[in-house]
Length: 224
Image (cartoon, rainbow, N blue to C red; front, top):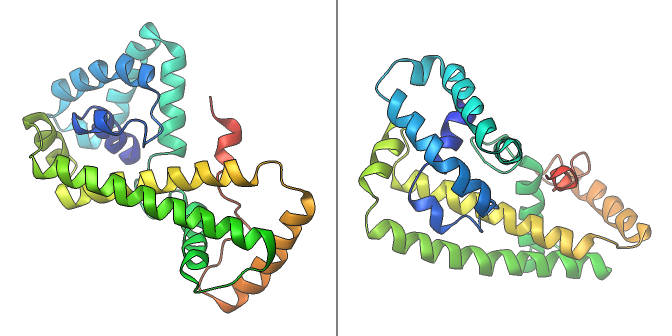
């Protein structure tokens, strides 16, 4: 419930409207559901149920969402489960594979052949993209959050630094997911085998320990 509560605080915020593409939030879903989220946060935020019985608020919102658009409700639930990052366990495989691509780009490690070039290019694309997102975030936050955003993020104990980190990290993982799918989809099986063989050896010599057991962005195969 904590993850859903935090996610809906984000979806109900003003600042998030400037980053919906970066965060893979479908615009139609966002426009359909944000007013309901905001109304329910306003209704419950001063009551103990907001922290202690959030499932009741979720149930009430879900009933309202279904009346508006059932598909939008399903998409929002999918987004929270697969895209939103609440703690260090969320999207862990993408964190570690993204770190691997950064190391390829920076020359810290070398993967021979086509796979190494692809991972290096993915790392470069992610670094460039995140720098741009962070620049936009700096500009937005430096101008000051809206009264509404200050209030709802205070409810979730999220300060400006925390807000910056949440959005930047999700955008970074999303860019990695996009580039991974764009570059690896359709590659010959022998290239995947080559990658797995190299990574299996690398895992034994490094602090990364979930690469072979968790390929990244598998959630994309079930996207609505």
